[in-house]
Length: 154
Length: 157
Figure (cartoon, rainbow over the protein chains, first blue to last red):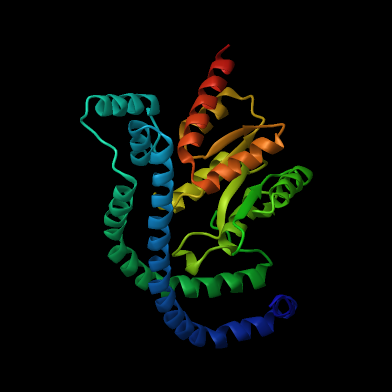
């Protein structure tokens, strides 16, 4: 692959001709490949999300007291503002019995229930964007051959 | 089974290679090096799985904050913007930072698995990575929060 890229980079007219001629074939390839990946990708993804989350939750609930484990479960790493305050509130709720941490098996069932909801949306998203992503990969490769640099969206 | 891949984003080549070597020496992980945030984006793009529809092959990032051009925090912001809340790549931030504003910003972002201070402690790094892969987020969140608080207190004095 690298040899072809080097050849094309030093013979840009030939590359341009190749890119134009290959485009319709690449478009067909992108649709077929994109649809396959669009189905497989989200399926693998949702399976891995559930597996990893459950592993993480079970490990946490076995290691930490319920209130803390539950806090870690509900607090997204993306939004940890007011962490001490949230932690205090959560602890209070657990101490007063308003909240209760589930058993490890409960986490598995909860994760399956929670994340399976997203699966149809992920699948539709994958099927729609798969072909676009596949063709974008081809365009990125053209960019790389032309400029010698990987396309970076910044 | 394939070893989990760790991306090291560090602008000093010697330091970057050193970190990568520490990671590889564990025998449990594989490491790739990026000497700038641009190279970091390239590596993330190259290691996409299923055209980006599934988790990246890179399972953890060791990120230096202070870098020329786009710094580590900006890099972190960019990658978080593109990720869904369900699959964040754990980021271990390396910093020798003494700048109060940046440190406060880094801890307030709360998007990382751990903060390690430079000069780097080899054991602390491998221990943190092990915890990331063991899924021990709770411990790391605790530690990160404590470290952030201690650092902010230090900077106030």
